[in-house]
Structures are given as C-alpha cells and as structure tokens.
Amino acid sequence: KFIMVGPGNPVVATAGSDTILPCSVQREDKTPLSAVDMNIMWTRPDLGDALVHFYADQRDINTRQIVLYTGKTSLFKDELQNGNTSLRLTKVRVFDEGQYKCVVDSRQWNDDVVFDLKVEVIGTRPVITVEKYDESSDTFTLLCESGGWRPEPDLRWLDSEGKNLTTGLTELHRDAELFSVKRQVTVRYRDTDTAYCKVTLGHHTMEKPITPSILRGNGEYYLDFNNASLHLRHKISNPPRSNITKNAEVGVISYGISSVHISQSSKIYLYRSVMDL
Image (cartoon, rainbow, N blue to C red; front, top):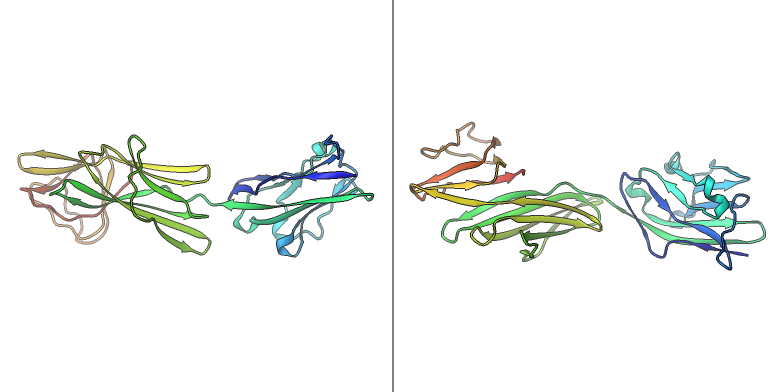
C-alpha cells in the first residue's frame, strides 16, 4: 500500500507563468516510493474528469488528452524514482483554474489526491488623476484607477509613512473575467507631502506616488508635480501669462513639465490631469 500527498491549500498561479501542481506517492511510513513503473493520471473532475496528462509503461500517453492542454503539461521524469508525480503546467491561463485530481495506480493499489488551482491576473499600473483642487481649503481630490485584475484587488491610499488615507468604498467594475477598481481621496497639501496609490492582489503589489504642492508668488499659483507628464483632457483656454501654450481647442494635450502655471490673481482655471510619474 501507499498514500498520496498533495497541497494542503489551493495552488495559486499567475496568468502567463508556469506552475507546478504538487503531488507525490510514499509508503505508509512516509518514506519515498518509486513511481517509475506506476500509472499516473491527471484529470479535471470539474470538467467531467477530462484527461490532463497520462503516464504509463514509463512514457507519456496523451492521445486522449483534452486539446487545450496539448503541449502544456509534463512530469518530472528524473524525480519519479523519488515518488514525485507532480505536474508542470506552462503558460497558465484563466481556463486552467479549477479542480485537479492526481491518480496513481500500481496495479495492486491505487490512491488519489484532489485540490484546486486558482489563477490570478495582474492588472495595469495604477493611474492617478488630479480631480480637483480647492483653493479655500488647499486640498486636492485625487483619483486612482487600475484595471485588468482577477480576482478583484485591494486598492488603498497611503501617506509617505504608510498610514492609511483611504475612506469610503472602492468602486468596482467587472468586464468578463477581469476587474477594474478606482478610489478617490482628498488630501491637504500641507499635511501630505506624498500620497501613494497601492494596489494589492495576494503577493503582488503595484504602487504609484504623487507629490502635489502649491507654489505661490506675486499673486500667482502653480501646481507642481515633480517632473510628471500632464495630460489636459478637455477644452482649455490660455490663462494670462501662463506657460501652458494653447495647442487645440478639444482633445488631449501632453506636456513634460516640472511646474505648470494654472492660474493668476487667484482665478482658478478648471482642469483634469492624469499623472504618469
């Protein structure tokens, strides 16, 4: 007799990467047992026990293998003598998520282990938008957006010390299998030197900083974004004595800037900008 050993928890893989579905055979006293001369079958119980990989007579026999796994599976042949019957799965896709069964048959005895594979999709780098600046309170309303995740990630706003600035709920949108998230935060520039938008899924993290500040002089106002790119996304007018040159009445106008003159004589010109730091 022998026993099968599998993972205690679901296996988590990232879409596009290779992963290993762990499985091994050992004696009842937990010592290794060679699986070289045994039959090893991997199936998907959630797909009617569709064949994922089959090994018998010391070779792979995949004539009945489900087409979507063709060329994607392999055993560790050099490790079979140590009881390692794990399966390597290459270029993981969302379709690969599901239930897997590893069955080992020695003709005198057989056993199996069943577990789940979860597939994560890592989304896009966060984009920070300056939604509004309120002169009376010296506050900025910032919006962070990121898309293409699976499952839904956690999105938070943090200050430079890692303190959570997040309030309210994250806005979540789903398109087929993928999720997009966005969340606003309002910060007072005197209290927050740098704000960070942090998107997390499992062990994967993407972070984007923004350092908004206001430079005053001679009755004029500037917004400083540390050499960011400013994209004006609507019709603009050319403020008097501004260093923004009118380029088009409607559309997207991009500038590589360190300081952008937005207003003069306390008159605030409305704008919407996307920061690419």
